[in-house]
Image 1 (tube, helix red, strand yellow):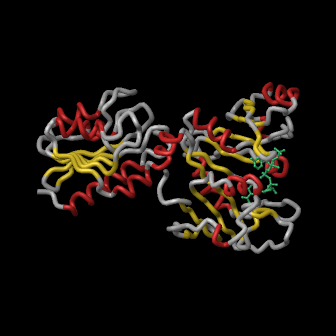
Image 2 (cartoon, rainbow, N blue to C red; image 1 turned 30 degrees about the horizontal axis):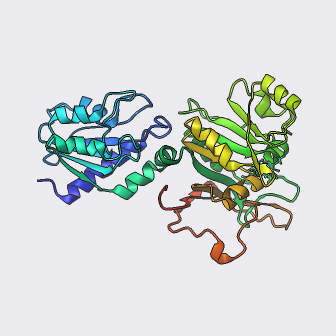
Image 3 (cartoon, helix red, strand yellow; image 1 turned 180 degrees about the vertical axis):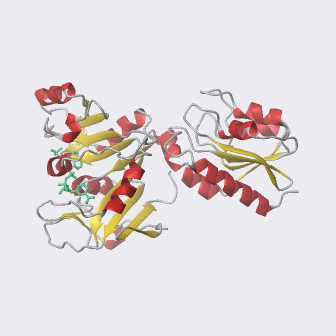
Length: 372
Ligand SMILES: NC(=O)c1ccc[n+]([C@@H]2O[C@H](COP(=O)([O-])OP(=O)(O)OC[C@H]3O[C@@H](n4cnc5c(N)ncnc54)[C@H](OP(=O)(O)O)[C@@H]3O)[C@@H](O)[C@H]2O)c1
């Protein structure tokens, strides 16, 4: 009889396998599966790429022994619908397991509990909830996209110890060192979009590309520019035929400017404004409709500040350099309205750990415990 320690051990292994799908499976969820009997692993697998076999099928294909009376550990409830692949519940039932242990239910309304019920109806013992928190954290971006049709929003910046992201003259090159920048480049390889404000395009003329070889995905570059001030000579515009580049603007932005950017290969999206700025909710709705699961907001301060003020962010990646910039006119990391009182400040329940990277530190943390 498997005991609770076995369940945790095998589920932890399944979670580690699931995470290998990062950047390859979205907008589908990362899922891992371990098949075990009498304390031995018979096979294991994970969802390797979008449209490819699900984790349970991948694990079954890698089993050398038959799976009768085995236990399947899955990080997400098995699917019971035909999508790009047939229902996993049918394959599981045919494999004849004694137990299926799932970490969490699938938040997708087409499934949500139905997969587990199908297994129970077939006489299989089903348990849910082993390492549920870890599994929910892993699929939080998928859960958000499924429930709210909006991507998971990561705010990222590089700051001095005193919280400045550029000097009073707008100089930001380079606050981070090359190790921090290399780390940030690797993060870009897993994302669907990198978002910046027009202020950053005008000040830094960034390329926003991922310079690692064979990235898992190519992020769309997104500029929020209500009046279309982005110049045709900007690197983003000059490379728009090679790397997808979207410019969001307001309804009243000049049509000639829009046409010039379109001719250079940019895609223009007109969205409503809110308080004189582009509506971030509308921008996220457009990205969600395109099935973008993870997006990174890379600054500058005004844009990051508005995401923060409107509580539209899910995660932070803050690179902290051992520098002090000072100056009341230097650009702050969250240059929006901010909190009037300390009790209104966003308090992190469980801030992630601070890691050493190069000469500084990286704080990577979720802003709320679970995606709602
Ligand atoms: N250290 C770092 O990690 C880092 C990263 C990026 C940038 N930076 C630095 O930050 C500075 C630029 O920051 P910034 O605050 O001046 O500019 P920004 O945040 O990049 O851009 C702000 C501009 O974006 C446009 N925008 C459109 N919709 C918006 C919305 N909903 N909310 C906010 N802005 C919106 C607005 O211009 P329109 O009204 O014309 O649309 C606004 O003025 C530069 O000095 C740059 O070097 C540092």
